[in-house]
Length: 256
Image (cartoon, rainbow, N blue to C red; front, side, top):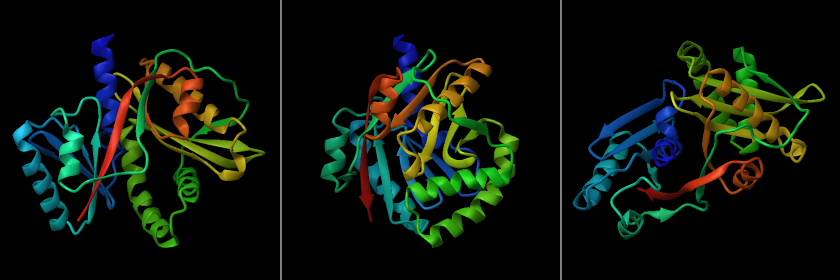
């Protein structure tokens, strides 16, 4: 179990390395860490630094951002991160805590809960865009951001279909799409990677139905495990469905 948990933790703590293909997605594999760029979002994952290398790593990441015209990055400090005391070291170098901490969770049997919400797997670009629009509405993206992301989504869709490692689902109430959920299927588990429900549809079982849909697909793919790094809103729901805690991820933001 310890070896399995270590593998699941690693997957949950570095979702940026498993994002579906997109022209704006880029990963730099450095000595002791990875820098993931997705549009204008940047994360540092898989941090395995020697104690004497922390300051240089921070300087190198800052240099990379400046070279790319980017102004902030989030370091994901989880249970597998090294060296010990990394969070305090990063604070001393000027990084600040983000508002929320993530909880890493896993499940290896059918989730609990029941929902009669209709859920369908996305099979067309139009449905894919509908799913993303729900996400953008839930997180209140600006009109300019939405225009940019629509263009990126159109370019990404053929790559996502060809890649075949991820699925997106739409949930419907009274025939109208009100929620979406995405999963990426690694060789050893499914990773829940994004999801949202429109405010007017919350509290009616949409989220639960989307979790069950992704569980069913990972079972069909022969890997009955699901992991996720969950925020404070979704973590309690997932625990009620039977997910168990693996650990936590502290998010530290570096603004240039």
